[in-house]
Image 1 (cartoon, rainbow, N blue to C red):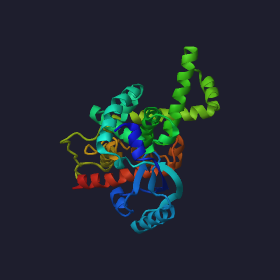
Image 2: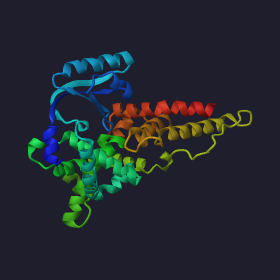
Image 3: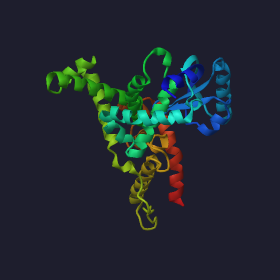
Image 4: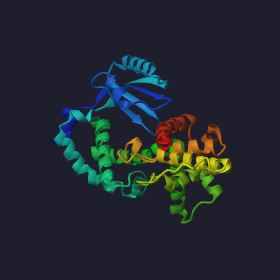
Length: 340
């Protein structure tokens, strides 16, 4: 089957969509079971945004179902809105052999296209096999979004989407605002360096970005914080067989015990925010929960409020709460293990 034959056999169709966020992460498996057959649910982890896609004309029904299910299960929806006329295709409706051939052809092409972005990809997906799997998933994602009526070849459409999806890896791990700020600064610096054969001064960079020097310095601090978080080696987790020893209260003075407890808690927090080795790297659990770690650590021992931290990191308090709640659920289990 050729590409043209495949697109003609399964044309892109109009769908109704419901967008919403929640104060904490939903159990997706249970949520999907509560929705009508044929409905799809996706999560933009960088923004914490859920998207529920259903048949055309189902927007009101889907909205009511989402609200009712979340209310019954104790989840609060934020910014729920319906959208009609979203153009999507379901990859599962295409022949499996065609999809396999498509991934086999466009996988190597995409890897070559992403060669200049590979250092960014490695930050989030270090294993070669997992990179290949992620690229295949991006090919299928492009299949779902590709509109053959626009007259643009599928390969060209895929190429334009790949760079955006690589950027979304950083958004998912570190928050959208700080990642976008870093990307904008890097592009401006690269453009200036190519033209003038030197890096721009602070004032020149501020002019390129259309900002004051004060705003540039504030944003540069957010980017520096972001880079520091990427380099946290402690997020690799706890080595196998490592023992957690609690000091004997009869032998340790109170002030020493306090330091030991803080060390124990911070160690448990770091382990709670490390990637889950059983999860795929492209899944949320397969990524280090850096934002959750820094939110807990700096508000607990750093003396900062979430509002202050939000300004420093260039992300929303809501996004910090989502990642902190995710860390808290794992942290409770870690502490129970240590206490036991």
